[in-house]
Length: 248
Image (cartoon, rainbow, N blue to C red; front, side, top):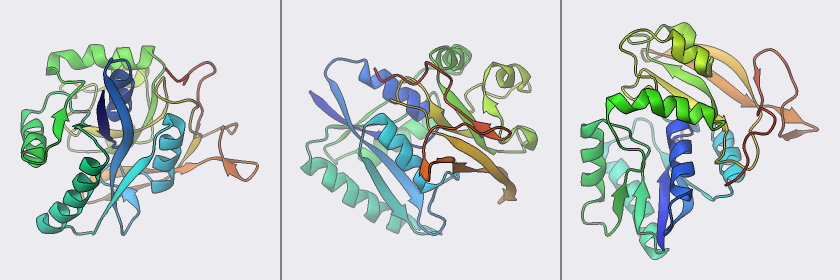
């Protein structure tokens, strides 16, 4: 049995990678590895709050392996903190780190270089080509995956797409040349429901801001009876569709 640590961005691709890995015999996903900007306490690029990633990990039934990175973060500091994580992973018998990358060769090569000589192998369960992503997007949605766009690159996609649900209507409205999975950085997402989770994660949209050339939508956990949980609000709220999100 191979013990797998999954690189977890909080978005749809890493969530779908978890679903795919769990269906493969001989593999056991044992944790979710997420890097956070320790100043903002948010996932880099996706700008998702740490608390929401904790809720995802709980819904997935897996421990979260948070890596707090300074901001700005030098290559030296990044290497030191990741080396510590890899050392822990080896001690716990982890054999692979899986990534939700789809087709960017330079990103794949970087992952391979990063793990070279560590004793831990990279794994790319979703790897394919740009021609595969339209079908992959439909497959995710058909399986009950639900997500929200938390970051948009206005140079590639109109900024008013931020905060919109990732669904068939959004895919139909994407401009020509935009990858339906956002693999070229056109957009990033937060996954709040799907077959990788035992239950959906209730979230509500907050303030949209522009920063460093990107448009971000803040998401906050919806509270029910004082606890983050199932969502019953309206207007700017997102809820697990009835019947979705069963663990497999």
